[in-house]
Length: 190
Image (cartoon, rainbow, N blue to C red; front, side, top):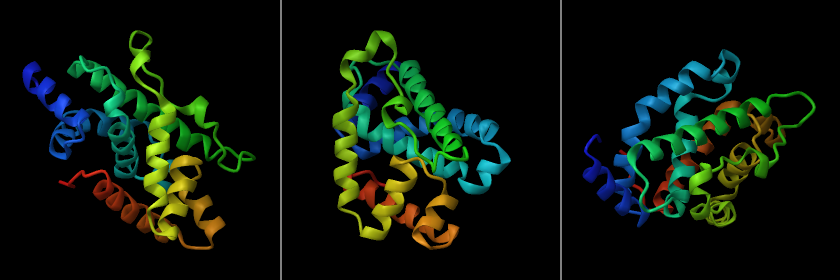
């Protein structure tokens, strides 16, 4: 998506929660984010959470926040936001592996921040509230793993242990929850 007018049009539609426009924006940064995650996800963390899982979390966070981004955001600024959210998600995952923390991560401290010149349009509280409301509408088994992994920053392994299920069951529930959340937010999968 190199044409600025094409990006601006897609971005405006995505801010109105047009699923196709949002997917076009995400596809525009997918390669860059995918390479970054692949390079920075340690083998230990990769065994717990895959590149696609991280990118799905990032896409959900972008989707819930996009209407809070400045309306005049350009393509490079959008890519910077996406990269910042990706970096913070990887930090959250790594923190969840630190012994003695039980996966607890300070949500406010780990929340990606907007650039200093753009802070006025992005509010964290409303975005998290919308996502939490959507998660509350999921089946209880799916909601539990989303809360544990996405909100609390627990690893798949720690979540599996706390729920007395296998790592694969956690991954399956996360995949189903992500698919359902895409439906709830009106985003069509590829």
